[in-house]
Every structure is written in structure tokens, then in C-alpha cells.
Image 1 (cartoon, rainbow, N blue to C red):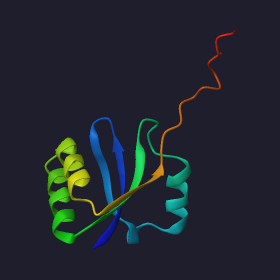
Image 2: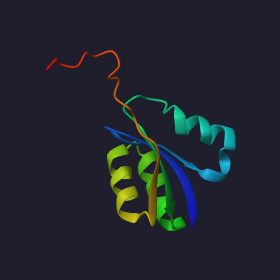
Image 3: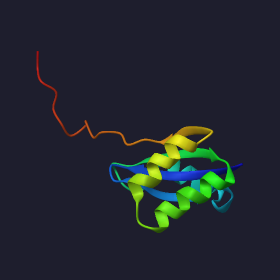
Length: 95
């Protein structure tokens, strides 16, 4: 089994990187600042044949299919960073 750091958005799976390739500093940065505001960063644990199937879908440009495979074949998946809506600039209705 191998751990992967994944970037998931509305269009599917965007990034699928083995965890060992990322430095601790890069993981910390991803945890605080996703690369796109609508994306979620997750940590996923997969068997190697399943990871290869996900990589194949990404390679063919099928982000949604890759995301479906990730959800169906992941042994464990944990959020690292999720988008936070910008509510500071919006006024709340007064009561």
C-alpha cells in the first residue's frame, strides 16, 4: 500500500502525488492553502494496482473517472485541507 496526496475539485481528481515525494514543508503548505479555492486536498491510502488504475485515468484526461476510482478503491481517505467560504466580505442579514 502507498499513501497519496490528492487535489479534488468540481471537475474530478486534479493531482495524485505519492506522499513520499512531498516534503514536510510542502505538505504543511497544502494543508493551509489549497492551490484552487474550490479544491479539497486529501490523503488517500491505496493498494498499488488501484493506484495504477487511478494514474491511468488521469493520464487519459478522465478526471471524473479517476475520482470515482479513488473513492471506490481507497482503503482510507482523510481530508488535509478544505476550502473555506469567504464570509468576511459578506454582510449578514440584520435581525
